[in-house]
Length: 186
Image 1 (cartoon, rainbow, N blue to C red):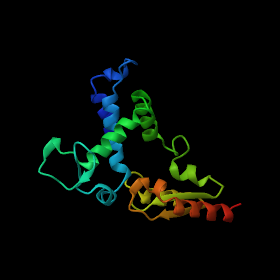
Image 2: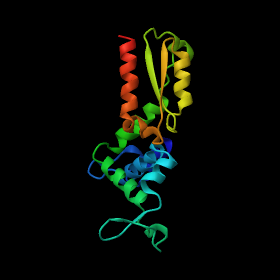
Image 3: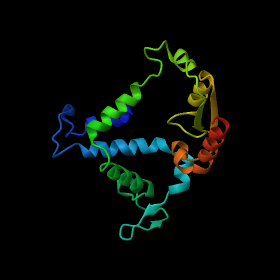
Image 4: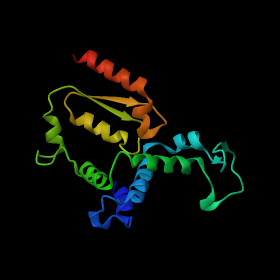
């Protein structure tokens, strides 16, 4: 998240957060989203989806790599990331995104509660924790730690090559874990 914020801060229109609402730092926000997208999938996932394919200039149809090289190469992955960055601009503004990511980074369930172990040991209800075996954004070891600290914690491991996006793409597995958990704990 810090690297994403740095992309926003580096935009000349950021102006230390004193932005002109009619001319916000959208280039920085777009790059921030592109940075985030890299952590949502795995190398294998990107390889399978895009490989080394390029786009033809006129028809935007995938093709095999041409003699083009450097920044002028129209890589499929480059097109995808730029599209995701542009699409994100309709959902967030730069100040909100900076504030949201700061809050996410600073969240600590144990703050002012005696630490994480004490705080989570007081949770008396059953809790289902889902983790994705290929997630680099929220690694599985973090989910395992939560389950160890929750007195009635249950871990469900989603098997996926999709990384963090596995929670969106592996709906059958997610649904099965939730269904089984609710049936067991109703």
